[in-house]
Length: 124
Image 1 (cartoon, rainbow, N blue to C red):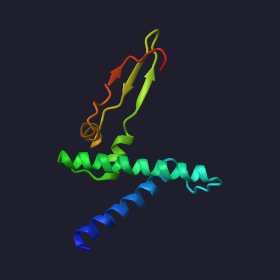
Image 2 (image 1 turned 90 degrees about the vertical axis):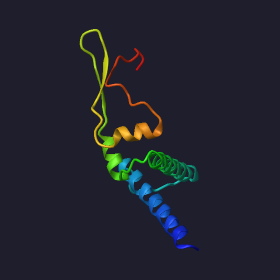
Image 3 (image 1 turned 45 degrees about the vertical axis):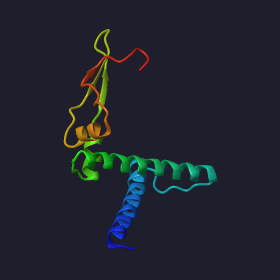
Image 4 (image 1 turned 135 degrees about the vertical axis):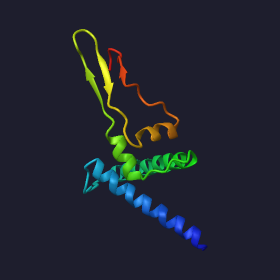
């Protein structure tokens, strides 16, 4: 096996292991003890989907020439919040200012960032 392929394989394995760790920490589900097969399968599928989303976003960031570490990107995205306020009869949803690399994630994914101020529908 060429050294380049070996390096790529090791990085992929490291990324998968890191994703599993981060997902468990983020969701505060450590340790997980599954008692049924379908819960084990659900956990594996959810973890695989999270990894797939990470790989796809990283590929898109690379294609756009955006270099940002994954932990920093997740930290910056985690700082984006929205708040619903209801002064008198009108409702507004306010989004915090996007900082750091969070805006890059939206652009790389081809998704327009949420507006700073919106008026939500009555159902939301």
